[in-house]
Image 1 (tube, rainbow, N blue to C red):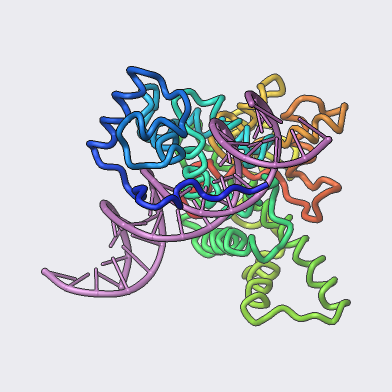
Image 2: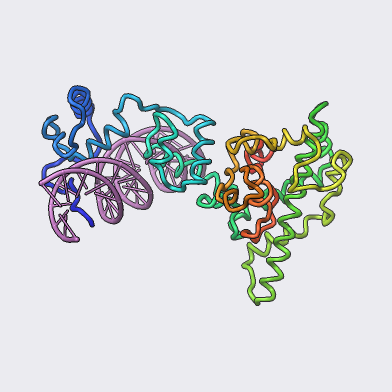
Length: 321
DNA sequence: AATGAAGGCAACCGCAGAAGG
DNA sequence: GCCTTCTGCGGTTGCCTTCAT
């Protein structure tokens, strides 16, 4: 196929629209409808190509356009639909009244995509990145937090004393982080072994990161000492299964089994939602939540990383990521 | 206060499929 | 069935604004 660009025609204006042009276009369409975009510019007295007019109308001038920041719900919907549809912006836009595909695309590229990447998720698959070093910043941050708490009993105590009924939540969060790190360290051990066997050597920065993660100061035992209190509440590390405490479930954003796929993570806007193709391929986990909890992020056969579930939108996590 | 970097967004480009002759 | 035209879509670019130094 292929067509010559319509705007190559000499004399046609390109670039930003002026208020006068906007008004002409708006008035013409309101009066006559857009009809053929090809002929519209001439009929409307605009020195633009039809394509440019169509874009301006659909992305900016249309009366039903909703402007302003995306809401949590919209964000959630975009993430969910993108996990299913991929970069089908027009299809995603049909589920968000008043939003244009261009706007959604921009929002994805400038906000959501970056956030997923920062948190170590592949924005295309919505799964944890399988390339370990891409997730290094997050792992290092977690390791630093653990070391900080281990070195500062007061801070640890303060965290645990988060106030009355929050103790269980705080403790659960703490244990969650411990398990996250333990999981990562296990992965790294495997990675390092593999690399050694293959005769490859990580560069200096990577090696330092490996050290930091695999040998945190005096805490090879991942449950001591900062999680002593949490151990009392949650005697065993049960992740990636849901913690025993219902309060902890809330605090960590675990959704109930009967929650629909839009709320798998307790309504938090992130992390990425379940890859429904998994559910489709796996009848035993037909509900989106099961697919997410047990396979998508929990060390599925498709991913070499034994990541537990990760809830980066939890304020506790976002505070230090 | 000045300047460079980064972020955000509107608009353009080129491809692909549908429609019509 | 083939060709041309039109429309829609996704990727990319470039400008403007905001932020950091």
